[in-house]
Picture 1: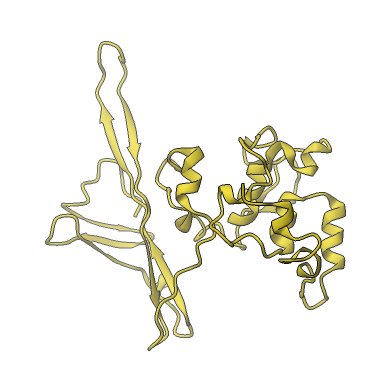
Picture 2: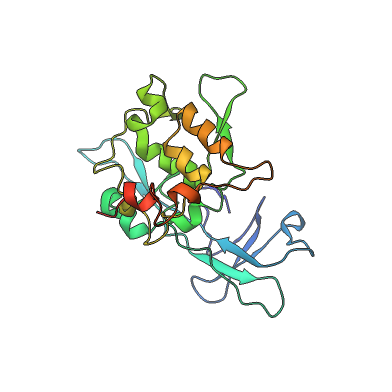
Length: 249
C-alpha cells in the first residue's frame, strides 16, 4: 500500500490502487483485500507468489548540530509467500539462483528503491523478462531489466565488451560504465548458489559477453524454433564448459 508518510496503519483502514488494508485485532496483523482487477484468473495454474514491501519513515528533529529537520527510512527484508492455485498440487518455490548472503558479503545490506527492497527473491517479481527501459540517449531503443540480464551487466560494468569498445551502459541517470567488480569477474560463485551457473544459455551469456560477434554466434547456434545448442560446446564436461572458464574460487 502507498499511504501518506503520516499514516498510522495500526489504527485505520487504507484504500489504495493495490487494495484495502485493514488492521487486525492482534497488534502487527493486517488483512489486504485486492481490487477486482487483481483477482487471480480462473485459468491460472501452478505456483503463484505474493510478497510484501514496507518502510518506516522516522522523523529526526533539528538539533544544535543539524539545524534542519530530516527523516530516515527503514526497510524490511520482503517476505515472499508461495501458494498453489492448482487443487491437490503442492506449491513449489522459485529455485534459488543467487544467495542474499553472498550479495551482502560485498553490499553489507542489499537495499534498493528507497531501502524498501532487500530480498533478491522479491526483486525478480518485477525484474522479469517482460520489464524493459529506454536506453539513455537512444530514441526508441529499449533494454532488458530482467534481473539476470541487468545484474550481470551492472557487475561487468567497465569490462563489458561494448563498454571496452567505447560504449556505455546506463539505466536512467545511473551510469555503470565505470563499475569494477572487486574480485575476478569470472567468479560467478561470488553471487550464485552452487550449481546454478554451469548450464549455458544465450540470454545469460550474452548479458556479460555483449559484443555483436557473440550475439551473432548465439543466434547462429539457435534454431528457428528457439532451441539452443550452447551446451554442445559449453555444457558440463565439454571443451569450453562454463565451469572451466568460470571456476568457483
